[in-house]
Length: 368
Image 1 (cartoon, rainbow, N blue to C red):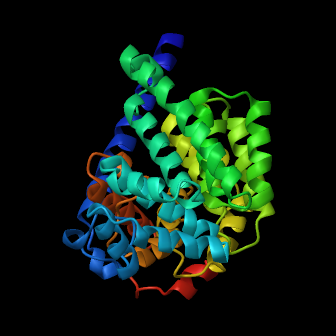
Image 2 (spheres, one colour):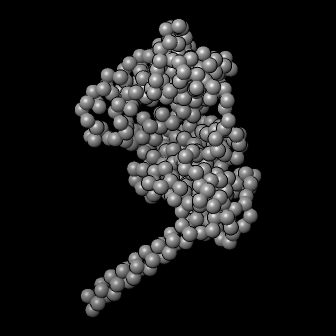
Image 3 (cartoon, rainbow, N blue to C red):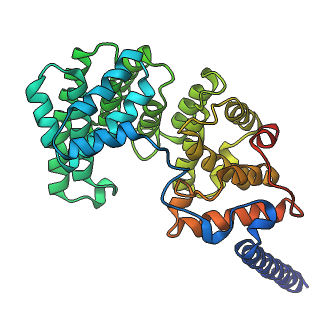
């Protein structure tokens, strides 16, 4: 009799698994094939995975980039000088990254700039970050056990040079947090201890307490795959989110932490680390953010995924409507086909939200 009971229980489990698998397959098929336009969403064929949000027309930056490629450094220097004058540290960091990327491709213009103005902090901070980019490019993106000895050796040669250059930039521009962001990014590769890292972090936050890019770099240091753990990473992210004013978009740092945990542990991490109080903080932050903030689309992509995976389908759908057809951002870019992953996620949000309705506005999303 006991054998019969065990057999019946096993059969019930098998039937449940079969039904569950079938329902999941049907749901996924419906999500892939749903009518996006009926839910106020951009049609599948119009999705664009090249960027996270709509491009902006920036003629001055375009001119500076083109000039640098022609060997002329003055337009780039002019743009960076304006950010220093106005202490617009977020914009300054963005420009430093743009020009450092350019210098990695071809540094002739930067060498001329440095020769003409050897004590120009703007040139030095770009040079420092370019050295950092070269170091990380030499190492590659794989785990250290999958990285060749020659890559590791070149990485070890280049990284201290980048750190030295960043210290030089900090000496020339004491108020500028940008060199310290480069140091924070270099700290992972140099294997700095927690105490050493915290000393750098104190220097940085004394200059810019809510510097978004700096917090993203620090989050990488505190994550499990580098020198921290999930607990340390989320402690850091929660403090960053809670201490910043609403509208600062610092809640994006917590969303990046969730994404990092998902990459390590799978989708169970969504429910482990996303709580109602955290969602309330993120919702308030996005509702008060400048709609023109260039960081907003990438953060909104992560937020939409979190809402979807925690069963807040109507809220997720509202975010997908606001995102339009842009899907070149995490977490969709983790998949082989970002547009397909994005479309499938939208489909799940739509189908679980009930019948199709009108397209929502930013105000609608903020109220959810």
